[in-house]
Length: 283
Image (tube, rainbow, N blue to C red; front, side, top):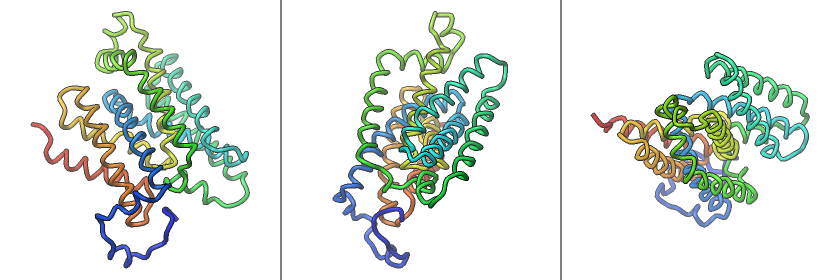
């Protein structure tokens, strides 16, 4: 069950698509607040990911989170609290491999991608009982979002906001000209590690709503669409945030109306926006 009601397709077809009665439901209100905050974070950090051509990083970290979540389900610990440090360690490992060897980025990501998935499958195979809770992490579920998640997302949003004065300019500079940034004395390696860690944190806390299978697409699509219409990086980022927020609200509405997984509804809303942006892209 994706939302707290059951409804046949025939019944869905008869409801008012423009009725926002779900705004009066407490768990949907919580999902909306979390969704808006996560969408803003996704548009912000996803812009760096897209501009740096690191889209595969999102998929790698999402599957790294799968290993941590499976470990949490196996041990009976809240999966998110295992997935957070696990994914951050994987992010640090990917960064270290990239810095210490001449291997390509996608190779380093692929190594940890495979390791995390293998561990996740192993942990789930050792676990006894229902796999329904694991499915909610794979596909995303509004019901999985708890009040504790709201505080966690608020904390991450505040921490990310604190990066704006000092780190945004450094990240943006290195994104477009890493060699010049290093020549100016910036510690681009350390800054890149911090950016990768923040991306990992955003991915992990977004999994409950979007799902492991779709969270990398959720991170990449809005900035990709915004890039089609933007000439400046700051404009691209602001557009990505707005697009991500609007798509998230539309996806949550569709999830309630049609009783479908929230992750699929949100990502499909993003795809629609991308197609619209593609159709009217700048010359």
